[in-house]
Amino acid sequence: MERDIDLKQVSDGRLYLANDMVRTGCNDCAGCSSCCQGMGTSIILDPYDMYSMEKGMSTTFEELMGDKIELNVVDGIIQPNLKMQEKRDCCAFLSEAGRCTIHGFRPGFCRMFPMGRIYEENGFRYFIQIHECPYPNKTKVKVKKWLEIPELGKYEAYITDWHYFLKGVQEIIKRTQNDAIIKSLNMYLLNQFYVKPYDTAAESENGTDFYRQFYERLEEAKETVRAYR
Image 1 (cartoon, rainbow, N blue to C red):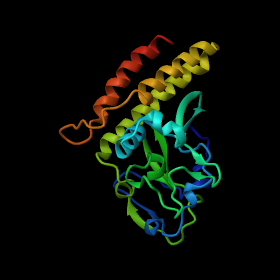
Image 2 (cartoon, one colour):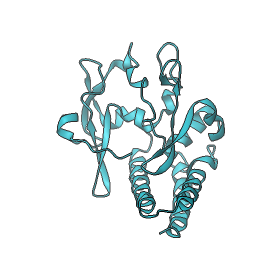
Image 3 (cartoon, one colour):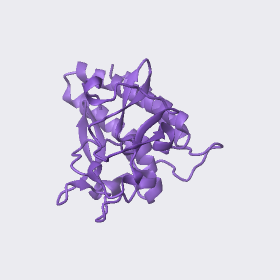
Image 4 (cartoon, rainbow, N blue to C red):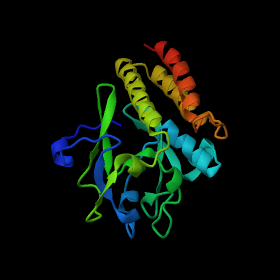
């Protein structure tokens, strides 16, 4: 999701990498769940999020679509996002006690909060959104520890590749005026990266097998997308 923001107004003016220290420590959000409420459709799920949730919950995309996730158009592309509980206006995975029930395999946006990403020169750095988290007296934590993502280097490379692939698709959608082509392309991408099940039991020599599966799908998708250019 792209946003037009002024970093001077929303951040501390610094950009961070994985080994940098950031002031995000909040005592495990003790007594607070404000970031899990009133989010609307903003917690967009990428393929790694979907893989992690399917693996962690032993579930499928179709089952999650029942009451935990929904589809919306983001910058011209149909993508899933966490669904709000209508009565409580909070994340569908937030317990009555105000705790995350999928903390171990929560989405990347949730892991980053209150940080965001700014993309530059085929990569990205993190920044702190200083007005987003109300928890007082935050302590310093190393970025990679805050994220708690295995194989972080692979993950960051994947996030970059996914971001720029979507940007390429967005350009195609902007250029074409054919609704049938836009629908066809969206349905293909939704099935290719989300609906089609990942093998969550497979493991690589170094850990999760997600990246092999994702890049196989990405290379196939790049060939398919070329036909729409």
